Amino acid sequence: MNIRQFINLFSALCMGVIIAFSGSGINSLTAQAQIPVNITTESFVALAVEKTGDSVVRIDTEKVITRSIEPMFEDPFFRQFFGDGFRNSMTQERKVTGLGSGFIVDSRGIILTNAHVVSDADKVTVTLKDGRIFEGEVKGTDVITDLAVIKVNSQGQNLPVATLGDSSQVKVGDWAIAVGNPLGLDNTVTLGIISTLHRSSSEVGIFDKRIDFLQTDAAINPGNSGGPLLNAQGEVIGINTAIRADAMGIGFAIPINKVKQLQTILAEGKEVPHPSIGIQMVKVTPELARENNRDANATFLIPEVEGVLVVRVLPETPAEKGGIRRADVILKVNNQIIKDANQLQQLVENSGINQSLKFSILRGEQKLDLNITTAQLR
Image (cartoon, rainbow, N blue to C red; front, side):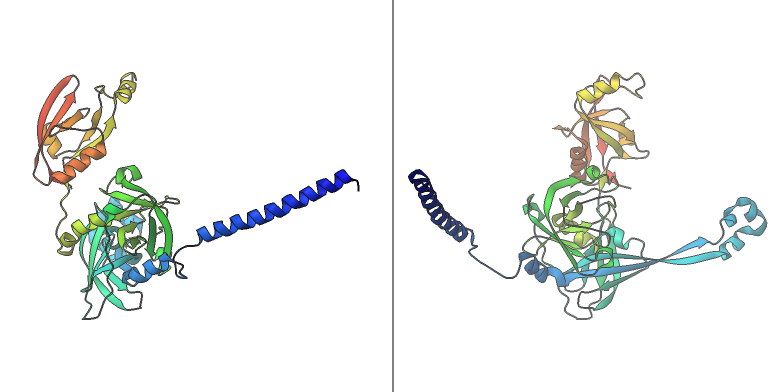
C-alpha cells in the first residue's frame, strides 16, 4: 500500500466515524421528539365503543305476506267460473324476516333506528348487547327522512343510553366509528373518517328522501342500518343507513341534529311536516339552455338564464294550482336568488306548511310573479 492509498483509507474511516456519531445523535433527537406525551395501551376507538356500545341494539322484524298459490287464479276467465271466493281460499302466507340496528336514547325504552328497518313490520324484537330481549312497538316512522322511533317496556330495568353529539361540529377528516349488526354479525365496529358533509339525497341518487347526509368511508352494510355513527369521543353524530346497495367504500348517515328535531314528533306518533309545492326540477345555466335550444329535436325551449328549470308539475299540487308550468325557470323565491334545485328544496322545506311563497319566474321572455302556498308532501 503506497502513501496515497493509506491517506485515502484513513480519510474514509474518519468520515464514517463522524457520520455514524452524527446520525446517532440526530436519530436520538428525532425519536425523542416523536414519542407521544401520553401513551396508552387502549385505543380511542375502544374507549368510544365502551362509552356507547352497550346502548346499541339488534332489531329483528317479521311480517306476513299473503299471495296466491297459483298465478292462473288471477286470470279473469278462471275467476268467471270459480269466483273470487275460491281464489281467496287458495292463498299462501309467507313470513319475511328483516334485520337492522338501533340505539337507546332514553332509559325508559326509546330507541332510534331507520324507517326502512321497521316499516310494515308485524313484529319487532329488540335484543341488547347483554342478551336481554324486549318486544318493540313502532311509535312513529317518517319515510322521507328514513327515521323511526321504537318503544320497549323496560319494566323498571336499567337500560344503557347513548350520548348524543352535535353534528354541526363535525368536520371532513374527523374519525367516524360505525357500530351495529352488519350482515347479522352482532356487535361489529368499523372505523373510517368523515369524507364529505351535506351530501344531499338527490346527489346520492335517492330521490324519495330529503336528507343532507354525512358521508363516511367506515364500512356500512345491510344490518348496520339504524345503528349509530360515533365520533372519537363516543358521541352519536349520525344514524347509519345502508340504502345504496351499490355503494363501494362509502356509506351515509343521517346527521344527529336532524334526528333531534324529529325525535319527539315520531315518539308521539305524529306526522312529520314536509312542505312541498309539487314540481320536479333541475338546475339550469345559460350554457345548458343554449345547448338545448340548438337541438332541433328539443321538447321545449329554455330561457338562457341561471335558475331552476321546472321539468314537471305534479297534478293537484300547489304548483299546479298556483299557475307554474313546465319549462318555467324559477329565478327568485321571496326575493332570494335561486341558483340550484337543492337550494330551492331547502327553502321550501324550511318555510312550513300552508305558507305563501312569492315565486319570480321566467316563461319564455315573460317575467311573472306567482304566489304558491305550500302543502304537506304526499
